[in-house]
Length: 187
Image (cartoon, rainbow, N blue to C red):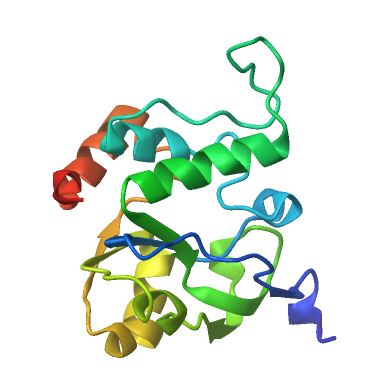
């Protein structure tokens, strides 16, 4: 491996998109973080604000993370957390996936991504009546436009990233921007 390739790993996405025949809005991230890959589900870093933003946009309670107390006081298992998050999205008509199927990446750094293989987006667009595409952050937006937009025929709304690395955007401001960009009541 060349010196400039130190720290890079070639990673396959590793888990399925969330969608069903009622999904009308497709939210795309770039590629799963280290924590998301370990959990085999989206936005696994509890500091990522994605689940809080989506719950606010959909007008529902925030689904629990693994270890959060449930109604009876028992901590949520990883499976229960994933099921609650999946249910929230599907009940809201939202599909979730990433733009990248595989790539070379250092840790969780979007800035390090190279050698991108785009996702087979038709897996969702061929099965669900997707009306709009929303990209979570600039990397997802750039890659969608370059690799997938022509295949879907839908332009994307690129929204500020919910990543904790995007500290310039407070939660309230993120929610406001995400709500204003997408007509969530149209679901």
